[in-house]
Length: 395
Image 1 (tube, rainbow, N blue to C red):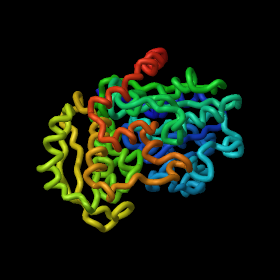
Image 2 (tube, rainbow, N blue to C red):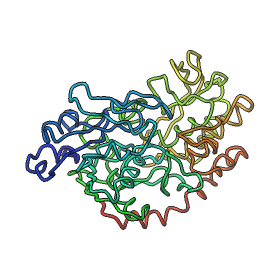
Image 3 (tube, helix red, strand yellow):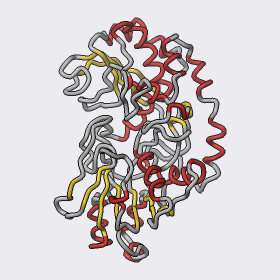
Image 4 (cartoon, rainbow, N blue to C red):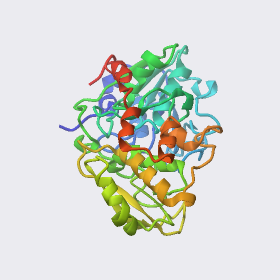
């Protein structure tokens, strides 16, 4: 049975649309479509007519066409709907009082990818905090976690390293839908509660990956072109904190990593293949490749590198695989490897890799060439998080 999203269940039911009196705003992006590929903005116009008064866009913009971190988008007037489109990745990441003026119901329809380092869940929680105490109802239209809602992986954020890619104490692969993030926020991460309503999905089960949902995949951000990329993202996003390419400027972004000084095939046969086999990692294959980014890091240069292939979703541990590859390439490249310097996602103090990891312990582990078994120590504190997670309403 095909999953029906919160957007589907709202906009296919005229009576349900009629439950909401007053003016309506919508935060959405390129992947905000019905199961029949109707854009959310057009579905809202059909449902709410002239009461649909404002649009908002997250990082990468309403049209999901802006690259990378700290690439801001402008506020515009929608050329067809003739209503404001406010950017929440601009001079502000929090809606201002003037942006919220005249709104009675603030709907949020964003396809998240189930990873802590993805900013849409923080745009959500900032909206909840801003709307708390105001006469505005926030309605989250739920969507699937594309890497399933049952597997937890990676370290829990150390709040000393909180940023716009990590505001709350959750693991890297957190196992929540975007509506569950909202519920967790209201119960555990804020003192002042918002007027929150959730429109749940139907047909979604926690063990589902996106390919199991029957829903169409559209880019939720410019470099997540296919659902397979969501499963490699928890590991390959680490390379954003280095001078290695994470594949931006190619068709395999966040599935690959490389550098012009890497001789990929030689390195694989003489070093990495055996070490990867001996790492205890399963359900994944590293494949040596060469690629040429067309923009961003090492643009127009041939890079040697590796693609992470998931061969068994049930046993794969992409976060651990990313840490493994990062550590190996750090020591192979030596002086040609570099950690990037601040700023990163509006943090001007911490090293970007520490912001991405949500701790400096993992960078230290890489630098001292730590053992793979030690990664278990960084994942041992899931129990308090899981206790909180099991206390909210879940599917």
